[in-house]
Image (cartoon, rainbow, N blue to C red; front, side, top):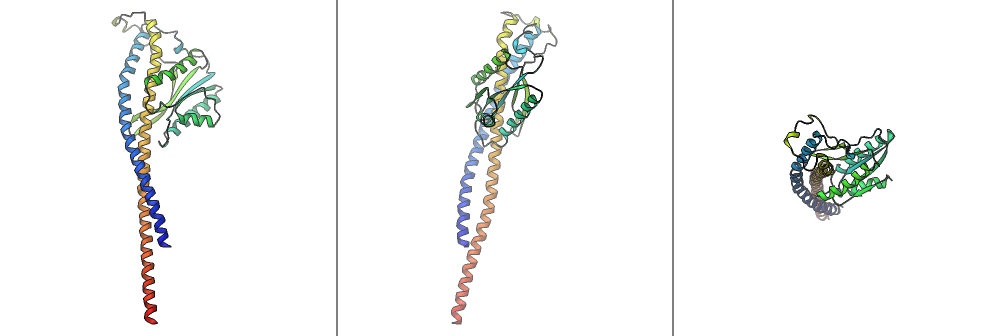
Length: 292
C-alpha cells in the first residue's frame, strides 16, 4: 500500500515540476515584454504631449470652439464605453478588474436613464459581454498584446463617427493605467467630448504664424489627438497586461514549488513507512523461523 502511494506521489511531483517549468518560462517572457511595452509607452509620450500642446495653442488662438468633437450634449441619452482588455488569459485579475469596472459604470449609466454602446478591445471583453447578451456595437481583437498606431486609428474612427453623428452623447474609456511594474490601476474616464482649456487665451498667439488658418489646422489635428490619446491608453493597457501576467506566473511558480515540497515530504514518509513495513516483515519472519 505504501509503495503504491509512493508511485502516485512521484507521478504528481513530476507533473508539478513540468507545470513549474512552463509557468517559470511564461514569467520570464512576460518580464521581457513588460520592459518593451513600457519603453513603447514612453516613446509615444512625446508625440502625445506635443500634439496636446499644439491643440492648446490653437484653442487659445480662437480655433475650434464649435468643433463636433467638443460638443457637449444637454442630456446624456446614450453613453459609449470603450473597454480595453487582453486577447489572452493567465494574467490574474487583470481582465476581471477592467470588465467589472466597465459593467459597474454601464449599470450606473442605465440607472440614470441612459442607453449604452459597447466598443470592445480584446477577446476577453468580447466573450464576457457576448455571453451575458449585452449589445456590442464594435469589437476589435488581436491588437491588445502589441498595439500599433494603425490599431488605435481603426478604433478611433468608429468612436469619432458615432460621436460626431450624434449616436452617442459621451464616450468613456475603461482601461488599466500602467504606473510601474508593481503597480497598475483600473481607470474609467471621459474620453469624448474632449476637454480643451482656453485659459490665457491670446497669450501665445504672437509666437506662431498659422498657415493655413488656426481653425483648419485644428480640424485636422483634433482627430489625430483622439487617436494619440487612445493609442497611449492601449500602450498602458498592454504594459499592464504583461506586468499582471508576470505576477500571476510568479505566483503560480511559487505555489508549484510549495506543493512540490509538501508532496516530496509526503513521498518520503510513504517511503519510510514502506521500509519500516518491510523490516517488520523480515523481523517477524525471522522470529517465526527461530521459534519453529
